[in-house]
Amino acid sequence: MELQQTLQKIISSSGKSEEEVNRLIGKKKEKFAGLLTESGAALMVAKELGVELGLEEKQLERLQVSQLKGGMSNVEVLARAKHIFSPKNFEKNGKKGILCSLIVGDSTGEIRLTVWGKEVARLQEQNVEKGTVLLLKNCYVNSYKEIPQLNLSYNGNFLINPEIDVSGLPPAEEKCVALKELSESESDASVLGRIIRVFPEKIFEKDGREGKLVNFLIGDGTAIVRAAAWNEMVGEVKKLSSGEAVKIEGCYTKKGLREVELQLGFRARILKSPKDGEKLPGIAEMQGIEVQEKKVAGLKEGDRFVAVDAEIEDVLPGQLRFNVCPKCGKKLEAAEGSYLCEECGEVKPDIRAVVSLKLRDETGEIDAVLFGEIAEKAIGMNREELKKRLGVNTAGQLVAELRDAIAGKRVKVNGFVKMNGFSKQLEFSAREFSFLE
Image 1 (cartoon, rainbow, N blue to C red):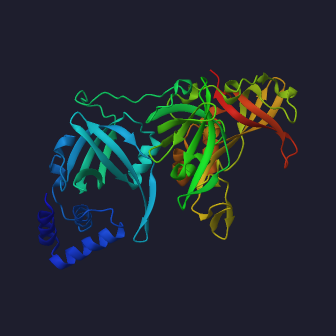
Image 2: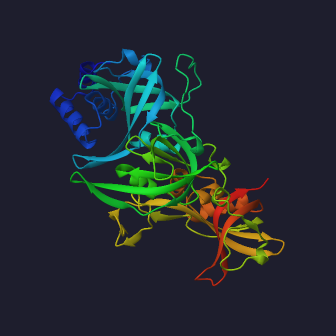
Image 3: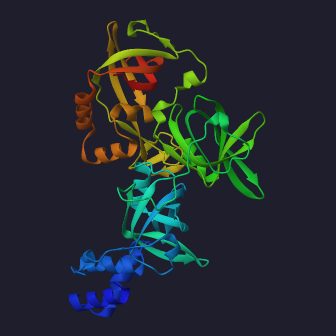
C-alpha cells in the first residue's frame, strides 16, 4: 500500500482530518529520532487508531539485490551476510539508539544493510557470523550518493538460516585462519582464539587528532600472536577477560618486530562465546605450563595452575552478576541512584556473570568462584540471556533453578587458590571450567 493510500485509509476510517493525521505521523517520527520512515510512522499511527489496512493479506515482494532501487518499500530479500560491522551507538535529536551495518549479497550483487535497536541485539545474542543466510522481511531502500542502501523497517524482521531453498545464493566463503598460518597480506581475516592478556590502553596524537590503542595476546593452540585494537575497537577489547574465547572477523595483519601481528580497525568485529570456542585449549596449555592435578585436601593458598576433579555439592546464594562499565568493562560503584566508572564517568551499567559453587571430592570441599564466560558456561546462559531472566526472576529463583539442574554433576576446574578475606577460608578462583560426562 502506497503512503498516499495509507493516509486516505486512516483519514476515512478514523474520522480525523488530514492535518490531524499528518501531525500524529510527525510526532511519531520525532519520538523515534528519525529512525522511522514516513510510511513506517503512518503504519504505527494506523495501528494505534485501530485502522485495518489489510496488510496481512499482502505478500511481500521478494527481490534480488540487483533489482533494489531507492524509494522501494515492503520488500523481502534473501541474502548471505558478507561482512558484519561492530554495532554503533548514536544520539540524534536528543534520542539515543544503536545500529549495525552489514554487507549482504546474493548471486546478483551486494548491498549495505542497516538494522536498528532490538534487531541489533538479536545479531549479537545469536552470534550471527559472516556467511549466515538472512531472510530480510519488510525492508525499504534509500540511496546515498545514488547508491542503493537496504534498511530493515521499524516493523521489519529477519530470519536466520531459514529452512528454504538457498541454492541460488553464492556459497559461504568465510573460514577461520589458524594463527600460525597468518601471513603479512591478510586484509579480511577471521580468527578463533582465547584471550591470553589485555594490556593497558594507550592514548596518542597523530596529525592533530587523538587516537586510542590497546594491545592484547590471543592464542588458539597453534600459536600465540600479538594483536592491536584501534580507536572504536578499543572499548570492545577492554571488555574481554583472560581466558575468554572469541571470534574476530574483519581483521588485517602487518609485520611486527618479531612476527605477524593482528590489527583490528573499523571493519573488525568481536564475537564472544563463538561456535567451537570450547574446543580451544586452555591458557596454561597454550603457554606450555603444566597444570597440576590435586585433591581438594591438598590445595593450599598460593597454588597456581592447579586443577581439581570434583562434584558440585551446592550452588551458593548470590546475585549471579555484578555491574560493569559498558565502555571499558571495569566494575562500577553505585552512587545516589547512578553508576560511576573511575575511567568513563557516569554510565548506564552492563552486567558480568558470577557464580559461586561448593565443590567436593573424597578428600574435602572448597568454594569456587567463576566469572564472566566461565560463569556463563556453568549457569548455562550467556550474558544477554541472563539479563533477560533477571528481568523477570529474582537471583534467588535462578540460583534455586540452577541448583536443581547442576548439583551432583562432576566438573573439572582449573585455576588458583587464595584466601577469602571475608570468610578466612581457602577459595578456588576458576580460570577454566568444564562438565565431565
